[in-house]
Image (cartoon, rainbow, N blue to C red; front, side):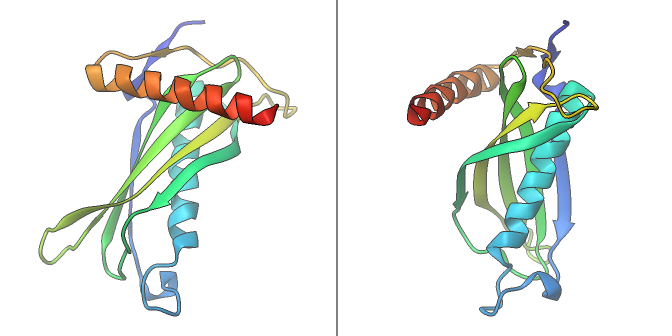
Length: 154
């Protein structure tokens, strides 16, 4: 199976947060941000395999700062590591005040997806080709997270 470079599956999703996205405190509900993180990660995983991929786990989800109604939010997702049938996808979330242009890093997450066939059985994932120094660093860090996940299972 031919490998794919990171840019072939990376995506950027954008959403303007509206009043219906707000929690009782008046900020965007963390669950709304989580949903869009999962959506963005799924699209990157699906692009990588050009087939179905399902969320297996969310390793880390850190909500660093609040997101406010009216902000434009960018969800940047890319595959960090591939296994036989699984992939780690990292998502960085930035919020932009559309009036001032201020951009803030508001959340980060690492999710594991499993590629599945039309019967829901795991299928092989194309290898990941890391080209840049940043991509190679992310592969190494993802490998450490994978080792920890596997050791935590025992």
